[in-house]
Image (cartoon, rainbow, N blue to C red; front, side, top):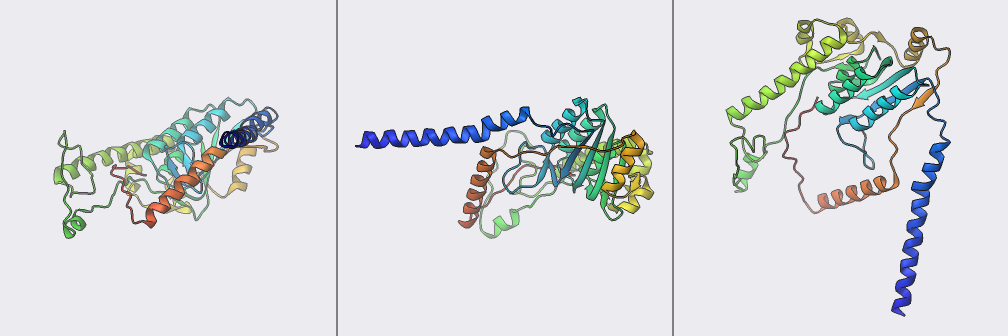
Length: 303
């Protein structure tokens, strides 16, 4: 009886697995051969939310992965049907490295790139925008913010209140530099500030070169302050005010396109990726419920 039940269970699991395989692997592959979505003359690539270096986005998350965006740009560059790339930016920035990766891909592609900044194109997102051939921004959008941020919470005072000690074991004097469990020493603070200043210099140099501005001129406004689109135009950070309609008009007139047929690039979340996101989200909230604390000890550099 037990053997028969085990065989039935095995058969049910195999059947379920086969159905999932057909639905989420075989059928998408078949449809990809008949996919007409890449038949168009303008690649529409959204950059929305925080810019990260991660691959796939999990369930319920919002962000722009440099792996995805770079792949989209390269694919559009190789597609003979596509004549122009339009990047729709609505992002406050994010990872310095991820932003640099996307900006480099924008400059490398051998086709015109137009950027439309909707609500926000700040920090790392502006670094990307500056690399394009033409930048259009809504007059009230948040642009610029040429600066670098790397802050973290420090718990040493709280630990002292609860008689919790940090047992320091390192091989390398600065190995635990930036840990939240002890105060930064002045030498450590100086080292970290030097790193941020160097990245800030990279940012200024890139914007100056991309926008054909004097480095001194960019440095003067590179305080981290954000500018409205109308202010960014006066400063030479964008080329035109407007929205998507103005971007389409510019593309038609500048590049001689009678009509615009979009090839839309978006990250598609697969079943197993979606399932993984649900599971990780579930366990995170369960952990929160039982009073656990998640601490990221890394010194992350954001733009």
